[in-house]
Each structure stands twice: as C-alpha cells, then as structure tokens.
Image (cartoon, rainbow, N blue to C red):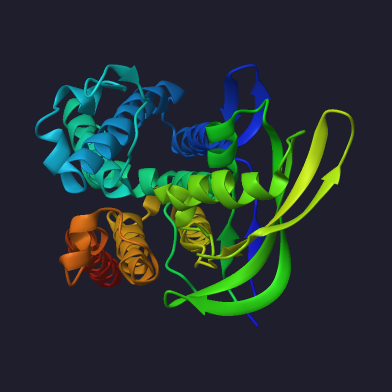
Length: 376
C-alpha cells in the first residue's frame, strides 16, 4: 500500500470578489520582512546604521525579482522569449492576442546569480562594506527567504517531484480542483473534494491510488453523463491537472449522486491520484536548517566571522542539496528530458565551485590569523 498525503490546499488564503490573496505572495512578503528585521539586528549589533540595511534591501529586492525572472526566461524558456523580449519585463502576452498574465516563471538560480551581482555593485558603491563581508550576512537571510518561497511553491502545488512509490509522497489535487472550477465556473461547481478509496495499482507505469472526487454542483439532469464526458474530458485534456489526476480510460467513472437541496447536488467520481515526492517541502526544510546553521555560526563569531565562511557554506550545502534533489523532481522544460543533467544541476555547479573557493580562502585566513596570534 502506498503511504501518501492528499494535498488539497487552495493556493490562496482568502478570496474577495475577483481578488485572491495567494499564499505564495504572503510567504514571499514574509520572507523579505523577517530577512529585513534580522539583517537590521545584525548590522546594528556591529555598529552600523539601519539605513545601510534599507539601501541594501533595495538592491536585494530588485536583484531577486529581476534575476529570477531573467533566469527563467533565459535558462528555461529562451526558445520562446528570444522572439518575445518585451514579455520578459512586462506581465503580458502579445500573441496570439494581448492579455494580462502576470509574471509566469521565476528561477531560483537566476535570483542567486542576481543577488551575488547586486552585492558586488553595492560593495563597489559603499566601499566601507566589503563584498564578502556583505555576502556572509546576506546569505543568512536568503536561506530563510528561500524556505518561505519554497513553502509558497508547496501551497501552489508547483515545482513538483517525480511519481513516488514511497512513504514520503503527496497527491496534489488542487490543480484538478482549480481547473474544474475554472472550466465550468463557480456557478456550476461550488466545491471539489478528494477522499482516499485505498486501492493501489499501476497505470501507464505510474504508481496510482484510487480516489473519490466529490463535486458539489448545481442540479443537473444526468450526473452520470456529466461525469463520464464533461468532467473526464476537462481533466484528461489539461496538462497541469493530468500530472496529478488520471482518468481511467473506457471506464465508467460515475459512482453516485446525492441531492443536497433544491439547487445543489453532490456527485462522486472515480479518479486515480499520482503520489509524488514533495520536492518543495524537502527544499524548504533544508533551507530553514541552513538558516539556523548560518545564524548560529554568526552568533558565535559575530563581527569576527571569518570572511567568506558563511557564503561558502551556504552555496556549497544548498546547491549540493539542490543538485541531489533534482533527481527527484520533474524537469521544468521539455528540452531537459534529453540531457544527462538538467538545467538546475548544471546551474548549481558554478555556485558550488565558488563556495569551495570561498571556504578555502576563509580557512586560509583563519589559519594565518591563528599563526599571527601564536607568534605574539
């Protein structure tokens, strides 16, 4: 028997009219807020001004957004964006017709490279704050912000893991729920719930488990026909939903129908859920533990923190783990399927190398300082 969690969390906390307050936005903002407070306490404890943190925060905020956006467009979808350059910087699509889309696609590696570049620019302008000095303190809160952002990915049911026949797996049902409500409208479908039926099997080589999907709908004449044709077609033809929910082919998926009141009924439908590794949760936990490690080391050394130590530890540990976690994640772009290492692994390698170089330099400085102290 598969052991899994049915993850049916909505991607938003509240809905007011057409406005949705998304968990991702809340966690993204929380990451920056707590990062600012911690950076302020670090700088003030070393006799620096809070205004230094305010200036640095502007660099970090812009570097994160611009770096993550440009990184996604260049590293993962350049085949499209090389012909639509303006769409990299504008939250719209011009083809096939003009529409507002928001910024779809952010890459954490792009944010990492962007932050390093931004700190270099910052240290060149404010020469009393050395490059590695700033990086050592920035990475403490970057780890915390990264944990918040990965939790936002989990709430969005995005950056998913590969199908998992293991004790650590999630069935992400929210994409199917959101697609059905979006397809038929909230006047037609008020709610969608999933419940385990408990029979596991293999479909198309994937480990799956039987689920009962209950739809609360307006009263309709034929619940069976609606289930077997309208619902089945909607889910099977949507790429995002079909990554998590499989409709059994040539099979009656209608289970039962119950009248709720004069205007509503509930329809039970048989579907199969695909348990997947919760890769977002793995990365969120890792990032938070790295934050605790770096903050503890800073508390130990404070202003005497060996230059480059925290930055080196951060990039070596985080991106070595990222390289490993990519083995359990679905590729983000189709072209990666033909690669031995995917883009996330390739982009991690330069950062790991830079981290080892920074650690080597830091340990050498510590050794030289100790030898100088012994001579005295």
